[in-house]
Image (cartoon, rainbow, N blue to C red; front, side, top):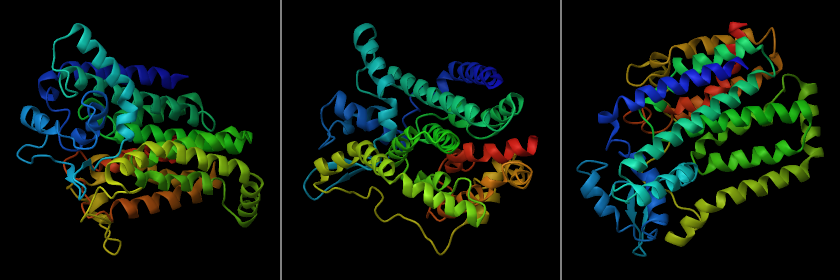
Length: 377
């Protein structure tokens, strides 16, 4: 598989950049949102303090993750507890790397074992690179089901180096973007496998992935439109899809049960700390459904998606190229893209703060791989 060579090149380039920009990222990995994603791990594994988060005052004073804004991302509740606004998904994905870093640091190194010092920064960098690389590998496997090895490798190359996925791997780790890219790539592969092989295991794998999405970045659950609408391009296909789903209600129920199981760490945290099964970590923030900033989100110089990652224009044009092949997947692709763009740019902070380009659009690059491959073909 030629895409493996592309992935090896991507790893080498990113590793070179990371190791040669030490002064820029050292003490800057866990800033703002990243500090909140990281917070869950030391709270549970080092300080055993997930109710009060008292140790975060120390983190504030030493690392200043949010500058003069103290206790950023932490809210005090009516019951006296304090809760971290950010979901647990990123921390769960970083867990193996965090444990290795903590073990190495406490056994052989002398950095502060506080969850935020250099070894833990390195673990986050490695974790982010790992999930992006796995996502690229999964994407390559998915594309090989419909395109030649050369086309698949070309698309992986373009997405790896020609979009802001590259930036969020080599220059700005610690967020949800690489993880979310991995999730959607898996969803695309499992969807394709489900309908091509009729293997019922993929219902459960889709339920598992949906659970990971829900505890990482819930808005990305819109990607479930892909397996729901996959292959529907006429009335006959719609009837067949409805019949297929009816015949597999038991497996769908099992997938939903697995989804809930994966969701339990987040629900359990909310219940334990707040006393409620659900907690809104973004009070006084939300979507403005009547005023989506779609034009600004796509074309403005203030983080416009197509301005800072113009290769995606070709991916959009590639939807027309799908008419020659894979036309049965055009409706699912268009409906999902339109729905996702509308939701993403209906958020009150449509530019999503400090970032390079439109960072939430990184998550769905796997969806754009199909029309991009069709255009190249």
